Amino acid sequence: MSQQISWFTEAHQASGSSIGFRTEQLLHAEKTPFQTIEIHQTTDWGKLMVIDGCVMLTSRDNFLYHEMMTHPALFTHARAKRVVIIGGGDCGTLREVLKHEEVEHAVQVEIDERVTRLAEQYFPELCESNGDPRAELLFIDGIKYMAEAEPESLDLIIVDSTDPVGPAEGLFNAAFYASCHKGLRHGGLLVQQSESPLAHLELIKSMRAAMRTAGFSAVKTLPFPQPCYPTGWWSCTMARKGGDLSGFRERGALSKNFPTKYYNAEIHKAALAQPEFMREAFGE
Image (cartoon, rainbow, N blue to C red; front, side):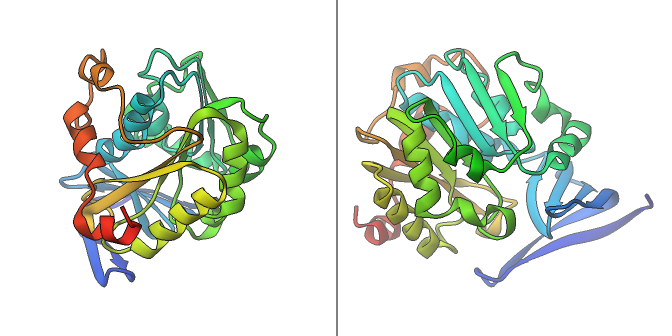
């Protein structure tokens, strides 16, 4: 495809703002049965994946999201052996999960296979663990998968989805969370990307309430920077089946035997500290 300097811009209606990336080439564009996917080459942020007009990831800053969606939960759980990832088609979350030696089996359930195949082509660094014998890639409906999951068979469920519209809309309600709660063992964790605390606070509050309605005993929202997403500030929300979320395996995080770019024990502790407006909104 032709090479010329232009800008990709995404307008954020909820925040009344927008973000743009200077691009030099549209590398790929297609419409799948589920969504429209584009891959751009940017001048400063590496490659850019866009789904239905919304930025999904860039080469430059995706490590922030992938590390915070995985390592806080895995260092909170005593020993997560069986992990399910709902969504996560770019495979970056799977790669981070499999850095943990205690994980024996990690299933990635992505409804749109084309997201993964394009990630393998344009973001191969995120797909380094796809061939790990502990990894299993399924291209089916994640909502149905969790509804049919064997009770008390899982230690960690990570919901790495797009925004709560289209194929992902059903991942943000009490019925889905009840399926997750049923599938988790006692002490198991659910973690879900929960949008921007600055722009989507009401959504986060509704997610937390629905998680508690589903039976989760403790809920915690962890904010983190994410320059390519609305407001530049994002979050994930963790929920636990039995037990609390006040601490984590700090010694394990301090002595981790794998590299990260953002996550460490101090970052984990910092993410557990809630800004005042979030404490007020969540009643903490």
